[in-house]
Length: 451
Image (tube, rainbow, N blue to C red; front, side, top):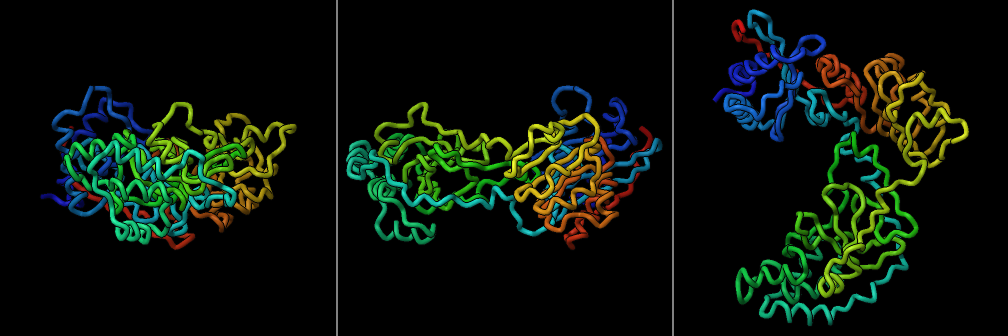
């Protein structure tokens, strides 16, 4: 089987790219580029509309994917330079451990300048709720009677098994959750086999997890690319039942919903929430959770009632996130709690960052090319942990030695059709400032023959 760095591995795919390129408006410098990995592949320029991929294309892509799998490589970007005679130079770009892959582009994603660093929302811990109490609906005795009636003959977990689970999780399970597993532990089918298991899931209106598969939904259990995560803002309004967090040491996942979303007992509720309430972690969201029931008893006895979902956490407070256009309004002022500043599609004259200098919580700046009057003003934003700029603005900062020292991650904003090689060179300069592993380039040479 041809290997990842054999030209023959890529030749069928390159022939398809060349054929498509002849029928597609060329990229600015005539190059063909793309990214291929286990989650799919993209190409620049986009292929002409011709329906679904044909068998030859699927085979060509699968050939490369097998080579990547054999090399234990998750994905690579590439650029192909193909002359009219067919002489070809294929540049393979391996992002390495310090670069996230770009989204639907051959260009690098976020540059991780500090190993293991997480965006601020992913570091946020729950606010203390010392006065939180269980809901009046929490009734372990009623819960046990209801479960035994609905799932007769079910097999429960032993006290030793529950204690083992608590030790693994590092948390004491609340009383209702212990009752659930004492009466009918998931995976313990008891009399009736599969039918009993189905009755158990119907009894709690979700799919229960066995004790050894329960987990605490800390922030890392909801991964998100730095480029997106850095622009998120978390907040818990005074009237919220659920805290607006990415994850919490008090979210004990014990089941999954019909769409595969985790369902947890919440031991760190919001100001208006109840200790032990039941929440759902929506897979389409990375912040907050949705209130399903006031207690496990409430969930089992009454089910998930409509109108209970608490989504106030997904609306950041005014001023927490804004765009550069707001800086042109002298009456608006700047909120001292500003965390995220973006371009907001600004099309006017370049803007100054003077109005936001000295803000203690401004951690993210994402400015499109041409929107900043003086990129060197960035050096005076002392709280930045993420910075996204166009290549020219990065060049100004690098030449002046003015890249903020506190950055944990960075990104380069470029047009999708831009040649990836200069972008990679710039990314490696930024990575070198923190002695991070660079993006590596391997050049393969071959001949495709005349088109």
